[in-house]
Image: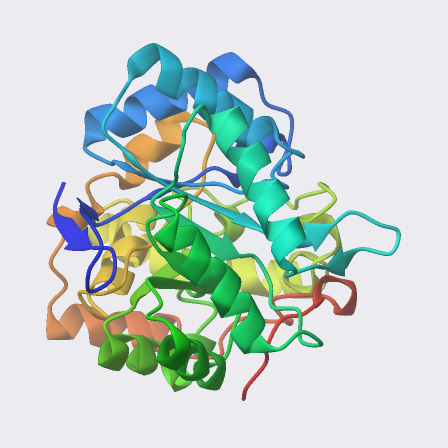
Length: 324
């Protein structure tokens, strides 16, 4: 597994991380044993960067990771997040009291006295950015976190935050079917020495070796790209890409990740899975080198904007910054 820097001053980590959202059962039923086996497979593959959050299963993901850390004692880099307050209505809270309390709860579940990276999961727009970055910088000074990050933000927010205190990482959705970060955010991260962490780089399961059955889980089941007629149109488009990958002898998810990795050495995608078998399909993505001809063919098969339907429904847009 090749490595990359987690921001200008961060640690050297695997070029691909593991997103642990599904450990909490968000994309279907799972078991603790299944998640622990996935973490073992992750470590064996050379991946040493885990991304989780307090709300993934309302603490379940962090608890499982904590049990794994206690029993295996591996040398891994951990990122977690906070900001969401369960409703109804659901809301965002970036206050110092909330972020500190949620971080302490996360550390307890993880069995850690610090994490290498701590994100505000969403920005609370009514609260001054300087206040929020001040809280995060104090957590860094106290040794609670190694660096701070932000998720689902626009380039101007990154530049403003970074001017107050250097940011370590930005985590936004980016994949072959979600290309918005190409319109300024990837470039801003590069210019500032900030890592860009693409989440859902495998299109929430659509970029697998087999066509995805139409999901009925609570998250994707109400997402425009997974409802008809969009779902069938997207399956049809991705089938062409899947066939291309097969002709090159590469797995579909590994190729999709290689495409992201080629966009810049500051990109560290975090595909999510709870299954060791799925992880095995994409863990070798760093060994794939795409030629100019490969990129041209991928752009022909999946041109920017090919996806039918928005990446979120209106009910999923809380505090997400849309800048284009």
